[in-house]
Length: 224
Image 1 (cartoon, rainbow, N blue to C red):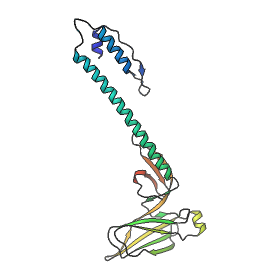
Image 2: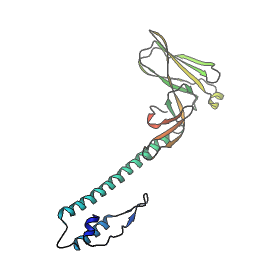
Image 3: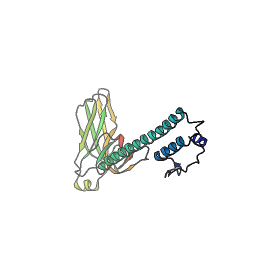
């Protein structure tokens, strides 16, 4: 466009707006139409602008304007999604999410709970609750025969002082099968203590989970 304008003998017009992010001056739609009108009025009659040149300039401007609108729409969608995820994460504060670990603490009602995953039938699943510091066994229960899949467990037998102090327990689980006993990885419910947003581009929300650490909110499979 600059080459075509210079051919008309018109002076270069100062651009009207400046991008706050880059400091680069940009040409707005009104400025573009003003320049284009002046260009057509002042073009050399012996060397007028070709229709192709005119259409190319219009197409170029329309493309840039369209890209700007798409970028604005995408930014709006990203902001909305980020706000939605942040609201969801905020709602999880104080609640418990299921994480893969063996260390657990009682909730306000004194319940310690979690789950194990069976990939084959078991004649029995035994869950043991021990003091995390001393290893003392506090409780053990047989959940009986179980089919493959998630098997939940829970115990609320701690005293009021232990519940108030949120005594840390170590959970272990054993599956008894036809081939013998097998230790099972445990998942327990742990309290969400904080949440933070990631970078603008990612829109990720990270939860801080007690005794566990950072957890991407998208990895949460169960909460209560």
